[in-house]
Length: 173
Image (cartoon, rainbow, N blue to C red):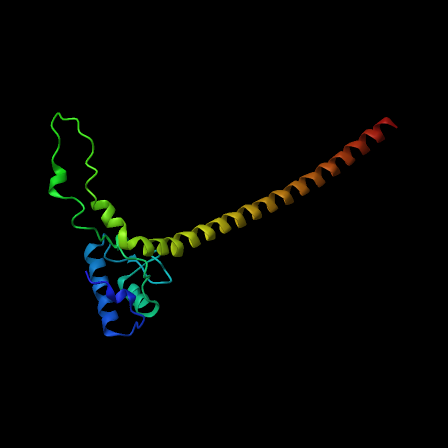
């Protein structure tokens, strides 16, 4: 499938619009859910699902994430991942695994290394940092609540001690 449209900066060009239409068609044909799909625009980065019409608008207004080379979230698979020769089983023979089958290596490496790294840097690192910050904020607020509870309980206990000590002094007198 031609993906040259993904590198275009002019989102109003016919080539870009045709590419978006092709992508939407491809995604719908391969989707498990015809109502929604992950949005690969530069803002959503395949983290949010929307109806196809809204994904199309996002792509036309925001552009597509150029690091999203293999459309794995939209069920693009390499047709040559499983070759007929890999279905032959060894009958009673102990052989080492054939390390000559580089199909997986070819599919997930070579020209895609830099865009894949860019995709990781653009999607996973910011999400990790945002999630870490959210977790830290939640823990900080819970610690503050526990500290407040501790101070309240401490104050209540001191008050109780004073009352008990006051009663025992009155009783002794």
